[in-house]
Length: 501
Image (cartoon, rainbow, N blue to C red; front, side):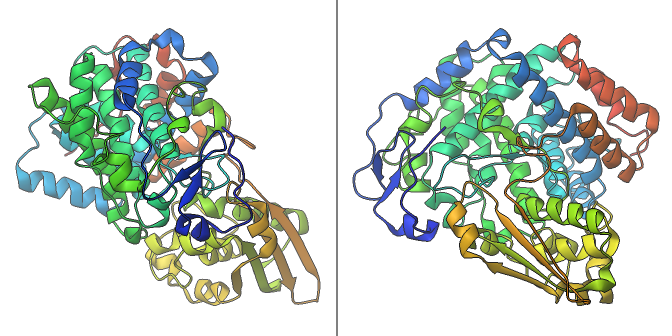
């Protein structure tokens, strides 16, 4: 999807303007007149009702498999996070551990809505899950939604024990991802800029769409599900770097399950919730771009263009181009940490404000700290799950190296546009040498994608981190690789469940 560049204004200037630029190049009002588009929610609902598995391109199906495998691995790894422990304690406190839906990484089961919440929180706990990429000039590249986390745990919870085939599962998954991603593309950029966490706000629509398809809803029930889930949409960026960020993602998954379960019983809601003047786009964004969503679902599928990125590191996606480039420079020049006097990292201003923890003290803060990500790569030569811990962040050598990292706004990165994650590196060595590098995109992006085998390696690393049995790990990888041939998704459940509670 292409948008006309709106001059060379910063995103803050764009959002303070009375207009933003639509997908077809037209200026749309941010305030005042609101686009009058009748039947938009109905269009989205009909897309969910009418789309068949055969309508999804083969290459999109294969891309989806990588993200599904990625999400399952992160559910295992995230079950070992503190949030995983707290979620399980909370379920026991509520007395809801007698259901049929698996709590990944444990021997517990719960009702589908609570399983979706717990597993969704685990998938996002390490901020290691996939990201939707935007090609729009007025958007921060990669900061739309984490597409798998609202959808996968929701339909996995609903599918257990119901004989859902692999094709049915993937159809529901892809519909959910497509709906939430196009909604995120359409809403005004001020939605994210002013503080909403779009995974928590747009993600619930994806969860609801996927669950509705799996439950074989007619159009009426889908529209009621959308109306109900919109009223549960929420999430704030101020909570980035805390346990509440993954909580918001888990709630996105849970709310889609709860909304469709209620709609199945006859619950009613507004059926024009997206386009109404008191509906989602107006309340949450002020305005929206109809051309980014109307007649755009599946044309092309977001997985195909502009794409979905799989993360090679468990940190905010905006750190990844710089990390990818620094790792390359370290290997190419045999750089040792003791040689580094200073490292300059130039980026656009939206990257410096989103990666807001410039002096992190915890593992969660470190995920949104360019300074830490650079420091730990220099000191350890790697940045995996084991590096993003309070103990590593608080080490004296790490804190000392963090002080040598100069993360700043560079005019060249600003000019490159927000549809890139331009990162300009300048490594100053003790002997006077200066080594430079530049990256616009990181490993795992569509420009440099992970293969299925590389995604499987990442999955195995997450499983190892969770101390998961090797035999189960290998069976899960094999199962997902040929997911279209599966006759019952419940086969996955014992592979993701432990024998101990």
